[in-house]
Length: 58
Image (cartoon, rainbow, N blue to C red; front, side, top):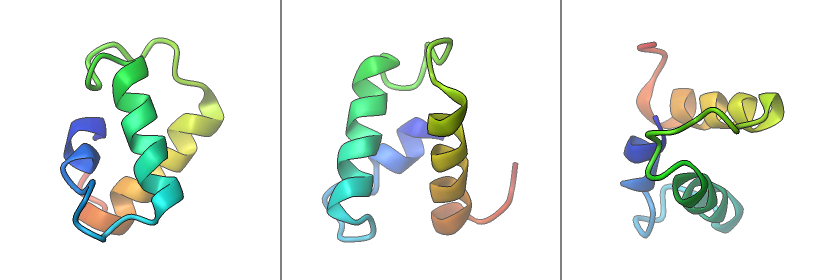
């Protein structure tokens, strides 16, 4: 999810806050590969953004 949302960065699809959030999460999680330290609140926001931009496929 993180990697896919990172692909939206710079396209205008994300608000500036959302774009920074996704970039920060990508950096903190090594591109989305190590999500052990993502908080429940961050996961909720991430899931909301993913559904908003990619549908409810997961």
